[in-house]
Image (spheres, helix red, strand yellow):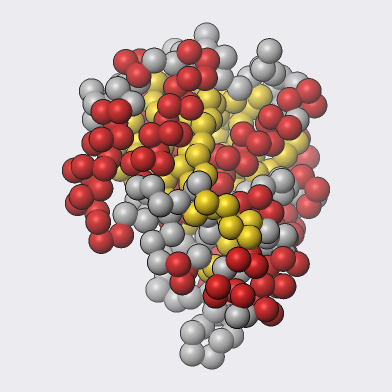
Length: 321
């Protein structure tokens, strides 16, 4: 029996409606040094929303379903992911998300939640989805990710600028669909710690946390490439979060890929966006390089964190007409 191919694409996203420049933020306005540092690291604007998670998600879902003629009644698996429900967790599940799914004609689909992997929720959700689809229990999944900054004091955290965003995509075993990516492999790794990268008392880097961070990158990249039977030099692009230039340079060096292969096109546009920027960057990179990415080209999406890591290797299914 041949293994099922997992096709992925139809990425739709929505950024916060308020576009803010670093200079317009009052906290940074009073901290010129931090403002200049963030600028030097590639950051420029961030997007803030006054909409709820459900309202933001509904826009992204509709954009995804409108691509390639997908219908809500074809979806038989829904993964909804957020790490910023905050203390409104119950209300969001009962009202906000319910209203979103009803608005998008998805009230018939039982939603599964993914919340614990922070900026790497995409990989946890994709891993769960792949198991359902490969087993034959489900055929077409809708993955939805949405996060917003709940406390403006955390808008700038860990040397990154955070935007509010939602993104959705389709993963399907139906090969006739014109989805641009085929999932060749996925790897995940976790190393739980209660420590911060920067010790809050000494203001010094925790070297053991930093080494775990680098080790996680090495592990998921090696495992994903091996499982996909792909050589590192075969990767045309490596998609990361919108971290600082220096952080991306270190990720490239740890993986062993040229820094030029790392996609950086959205850093100045909206900065980091929890797990959403992984998928948004994948879509942007693909749209900007369609003609240079022939069928069967390989790209990778990697997520790095202090506790969770993930990497997916994708093959270009077919260039869009």
